[in-house]
Image 1 (tube, rainbow, N blue to C red):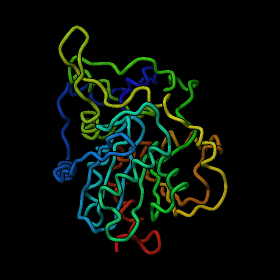
Image 2 (tube, helix red, strand yellow):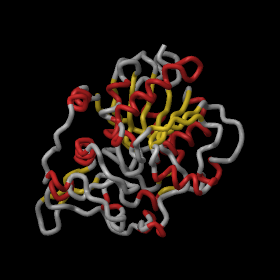
Image 3 (cartoon, rainbow, N blue to C red):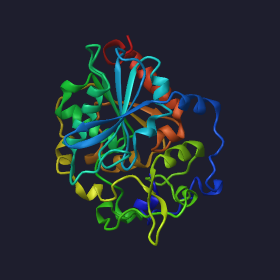
Image 4 (cartoon, one colour):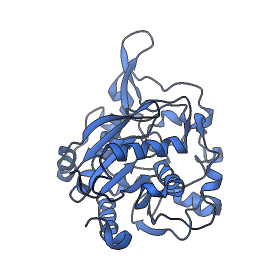
Length: 325
C-alpha cells in the first residue's frame, strides 16, 4: 500500500524511486501470468458497485481471493492465473478500495456480503460445490469473520498472513489510520506518485516489478490544485475511521468452528511477530499453519511462486481429500 496513508513510517527505501517512473524488468513467469488477463466487471452489493476480476472456466471448483487493507483485487492478478488451471477464480476489491465505490460507513458484515456477492456473480457455486474463501492480511480478517458468521457460504477458508487487533501501535512510529483528517495527496506526475509507494507494515522489496504492477493499479487521475491533473491513491483515506470494528473482540472467542481453516504466513512477518506478543490477537491454535520461508508479510510480493505452490498443494488434499476434483 502507499505510504501516503502513514507518513510517519520508519524510514524504508521506496522500492520504485530508483526506476524514475519506468517499469522494472520482470521475469518471464510474471509477464506470462499477466498475459492471462481477467474478465473485469462491477457487481452491485448493498448500494455499492464492487470490482470483480475472474479467471478460469465456470463449473470448476471455486476460489475467491480477498486483498489487504488499502489494496485491491489486482494484488492477485499474477497469482490467480496459476490457480485457474484447476479452479474458477475470482477476486474482489472491497468497498473503499480499488475501483469499487466508497461507502459512508464500513463494517465486517458489509465486506463479507461483498465477497459473497462477488462469489455468486462469478459463478463459483455453479458446480454445486461451495468455494474456498482466501484472504490476505485485512482481507483474511474479513474471510475469518465470514467463516464464523456465514459458514454456509464456503467449503473452507485460507488466511494468508492474517493478524487481528488493528494497525501497528503509535509507539512503533506509526500514525494511526483513525487520525486521518486529510484526503489522499495528489502528485503532479506518475513518477512522483510511484516514488512514494511503500508497503505497510514497513518492509523491503525483493521483487520491484511486482511492486510496480501493484502501485500503478493503486492510482487514479485527480485534479491538481492550481489546475491540471495529477495522480492520487484509489483507496478511501478515511476508511479505517469509518469502519465499525466492534465485532473484532468477539471473533476470536474460543469455541468450535464449522469451517475448516488454514493459515499461511511469512517466516519473517511483522504481523505474526505482533500476534505472538499478544495472545488476544492470535489466530486460534487449532487452525492449521503453513510457513513460507524467507518471506515477510506481503507473501505474494516476497515469495509469489511459493505462495502459489502452497495454495495448490494444500487445496489438492484439503479439505476432505482436496477441492480440485
